[in-house]
Structure formats: structure tokens, C-alpha cells
Image 1 (cartoon, rainbow, N blue to C red):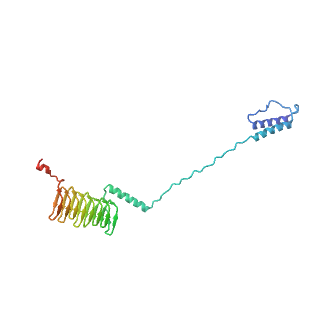
Image 2 (cartoon, rainbow, N blue to C red):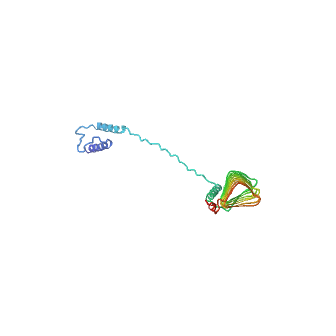
Image 3 (cartoon, rainbow, N blue to C red):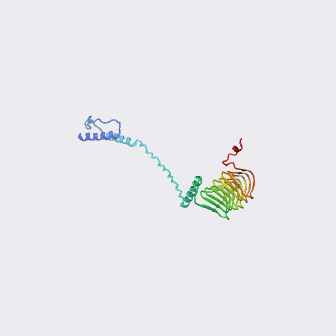
Length: 251
């Protein structure tokens, strides 16, 4: 009896573990296999059937999602050569200097055999002996002994046997030497003219017209000195003078 009871308890526990939620064997009910004529083989077959049912239950396959590798974006690093960086920095400093009117102690020379097409700008000075087809701007002094086909801007302007077609603007003095030809207007704070000028002269200070000067245009200044032999074809006005001309003659 003890052997069959233990056998029954073991199978009861196995069925309870393999078939969850199913009917459990009552441990309190004593089964007397000998007295009740229990067919042990039949009971084993039943248990085997339960085991087969448990084994035949479909197991849901585990679907593994494919791992998608994200593309690695490499940062592009552009290496700037030291000489290029230095050149860019120099240009940037020159531009800043020109815009801020800082005068650098340097002079750029355009030799007599050189012809440049395009605008020129410098925070220093220019010495133009060749030909420039374009506007010229500098914070320093502009000396021209060659040709400029364009407007010019500088703090001081000096032309010696030069030919210029374009306006001449200076925040300081303009000097036109003998043998120079200027076709364009002149604006400055003072001027000395010994060459030929075809255009109006607008000067806030004094104007000196030398003996060899030929001017075709009007002169506006604070004062004017015309030396003997100078030729002026135009009007002279000392509109910047401190004298009240209208007040002298009355209204």
C-alpha cells in the first residue's frame, strides 16, 4: 500500500505541474489499488496521454527583429593650409583696416610695366607707376606717375606726369604736377594745380593755380591764388570763405 500511495502522490504532483489549471488529485483520498482493482497500466497510459498533450501544445516561436545598423556619418574635416589661412587673415585685416580708416605704414607699388584690371584697395599707400583699369582706394597717400582709368580715394593725392580719367577724392591735399592730365572732378581740403584739369574743383580750403595750369571747370574754395600765366575757363567762387559777402552789400 505504501508503495502505490507514494506512486500516486508523485504522479499527482507531476500532473499538477505539467497541466496548470487542470484538476488536481486529492491527497486526502486514499486509493487502494489492490482493493479497488485499479489498473496500473491504464493509469500510466492516461498520464502518458496528458504528457503528450502538454508536449503537443504549439510553442509560439520567438521572432527576433533584425538589427538595423545605423549608418555612421563621419564629420568631414577640411584642413586649411597655413599659408592659405595666413593670406585670408591678411586680407581680412586689410579689409577691416580700410573700413576703419586705419592707415598702415606700407606702400604697394604698381611698376611701370604692369597693367591691372580691377579695383584696388589698401589700408596703406599706393605708388602707381603702371596702368590701373579700375577704382583705387587707400587710407594713405596715393602717388600716380602712370595711368588710372577709374575713380580714386585717398588721404593725400599727388600726380606727376600722370593721366587720370575719373574723379579724385581726398580727405587731405591734392597736388597736380606739371605734365599731368586729369579728366574728372576733384574734391579735397586743399589743392595745388600745375597741370591740366577738365572738371570742377571743390575744395574746402585754399586753391593755388600755378603758372602752367590749365583748368576747364568751375572752382569752389575758401580762397584762390591764380599765378600769372594760368588759364581758367570757368567760374571761381569763394563760397567757403568766412566773409559774409551778402552782408557787405546788404540785402
